Image 1 (cartoon, rainbow, N blue to C red):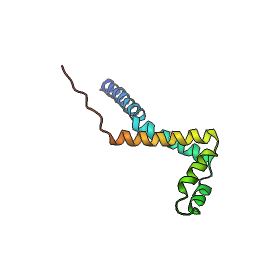
Image 2 (cartoon, rainbow, N blue to C red):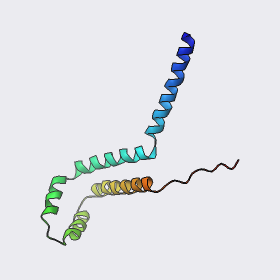
Image 3 (cartoon, rainbow, N blue to C red):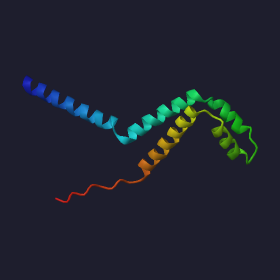
Image 4 (cartoon, helix red, strand yellow):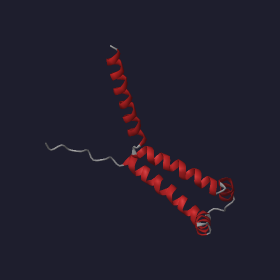
Length: 107
């Protein structure tokens, strides 16, 4: 009986590992991790509270000019991280909303 229990434990451990790896490498999980990392990096590079205060002090109609001015006067690393954050967010939205085609077995 002990051999059967050990064999069952080993098999179930492998099943759990496989399931964990499958969840960890899923595209949605990778998108969310990338969003979190890019968001954290952007928060470290940019003072978010100051940007929020500046946006709140704008007059009506000046938001577009403020965004363009802010993006043109920032450094390259901040632009890359911001672009990564935007691209990852849009691709996650596309991944969640666009249904994937189902595989059809012909045989």
